[in-house]
Image 1 (cartoon, rainbow, N blue to C red):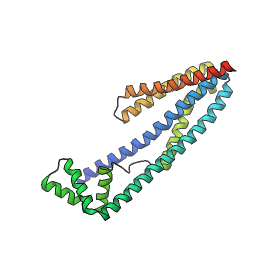
Image 2: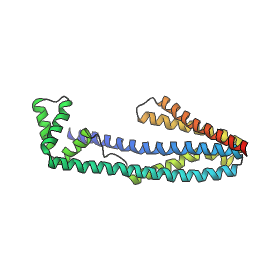
Image 3: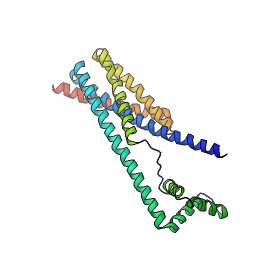
Image 4: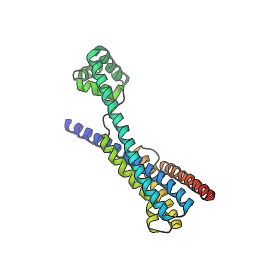
Length: 237
């Protein structure tokens, strides 16, 4: 019985870590694709020069990827620091106000429907071990978990996925005439956005078709804005 519980816990922890990894991958890929698509459409419509589009696209792709990676690092670092600060605060409260913290454990499990001797046994079991006590307070009272990617891992995942996403709309321009390349860029980008949105919908237990269509619409709106800006630049030139 105990082995099966440990196995289940291990599976849940792996699932949580996988979800964190996948979330970072989606974030970077989506952002890189949408931004570069808007940039290259605007420049392509404004200039019609493949070399300029490629140069601008590559510059923007690497700048965007580095920027996204930096944001991922700082946000992940902040998440870790916040968790650690709350953990220390919780430890201090358990040491300084044990009766109050025991009452909080009691209230938490009372709300879950436990009563009488069973409730008292649960409270006694939890509060007999400070680490277990602290972990329960972090999860149940503060709704915080330590199951997140490390800042360095998040940074690397977001950088790579942003770079991959950036090259999806840019790739056809390396090999085809600009007008044909732009059409393929739109098709590839729309398909990639739908797949990213669908995957996100699956991850969050939402409607994956709706999520895919929503993300596609957002990306194509960004492309439309790029097209309009490019037209305005072209006319003004």
